[in-house]
Image 1: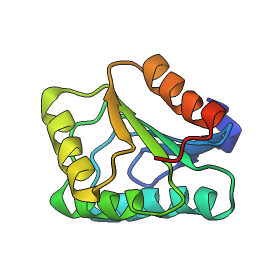
Image 2: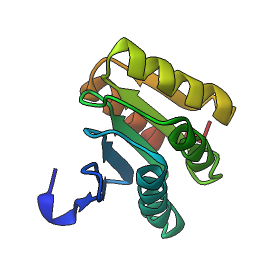
Image 3: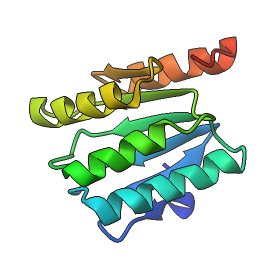
Image 4: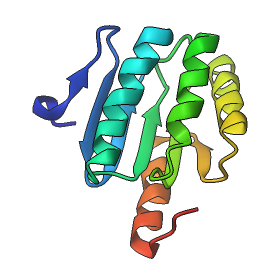
Length: 132
């Protein structure tokens, strides 16, 4: 992670864009206002054409409010987000994230155990120009 390009949210989470991928490091609880901040920062990269893929690190994540989950669903419904890979996290947080995946009605989102696996899957989509 290149620290100079990292956006740190008021809640302590991080987002940055590198190599066509929006990266999220979720290390603090995400409430409604934090989710709005994260969504808006991500959409800036998508709308500028800098990224169409999303990597979300939930290894340190502890909590997502129901309002935050609704905002993440909205984020993932952006038509220019082609794929999203979520990795890490305990059973509770992964369960909450699975609700977001189901509610977004997108088939282009997957869970992975490691960042390496997640990025490999995202890069395959770039290399093969896969959008779903």
